[in-house]
Image 1 (cartoon, rainbow, N blue to C red):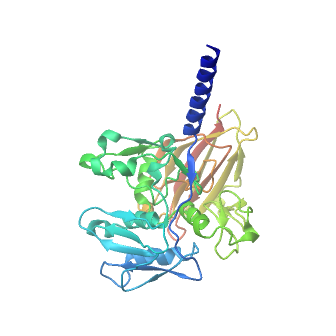
Image 2: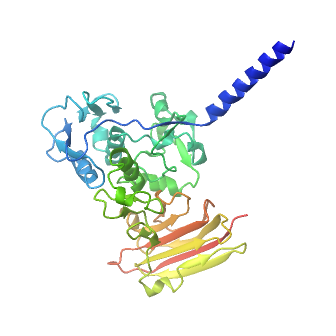
Image 3: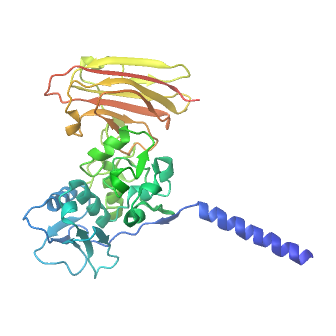
Length: 379
């Protein structure tokens, strides 16, 4: 009887240990072994055109990561990337061997869709679909019943946490529109701050700073020892090791400060302290840039509500540089919430003890904009 109890006790311990291990996502850092600078990573484009959007994107990435891409006229046989035509379904076959190429298969429609091209290039470089993240349920709600069978794999949640993982990024090129793969063009998922993040996802046209940060640590890690562990607020080293790359509204060589107000319409204050009482702030802004910082001295999460934001320029959303940016999450390197349409009563989820609010207008256009927000410590 005693032996039976001992065996039962050990079995229970093993079961508990297995459950605890299951709860903790494993880590992976696999990415294709492309050559880094000064060597070139070769690519081939089967589609017509001497300089396609693919060429434009890879040339752009050359300025941010340690890979120098060079196009060749024939299909790549060793390590490199082939962008090939398909009449069935777009897909990526990643290389894990320097003797094999990564093959990106694109339909004609996807080749003509810049957002899809960005997504498949990101995939080919080793980035993962954001919707597959192990923690995605905290940021989006996936509507499984609305997903077409052939797209189920795109929405399958992973149990692994990547070595280069940061917080969930709504501005990444690796998050396709909520209607992607859905039945009858309905939603496949919705964000926790609908409709503002949904609109923001649809406007994504470039790799986010967070995307570039992940790619930097994949291919450039250890190349800039002078800035090692010195970048603040989610920044990361520039590939030339001159300074840190920052998200809005941060600047300075190490992203340690936030931008200053130059326009009188921003008013004198730019830093506020929150407490248990709701405080309000309102300004009428021209098309200059205004930056504000809200901090809880008690280290409580700050609850911000955008009571009103009115833009005099109705076409502001055409340029992602302009609008209202709210950097409220603990990982300040993530893409801030971007609002460029008139809005009211937008309750920002209390997520950190410091919140940055930036209003950026086109200073070459005349305008009269209104911004009103409230803030207080979250209980």
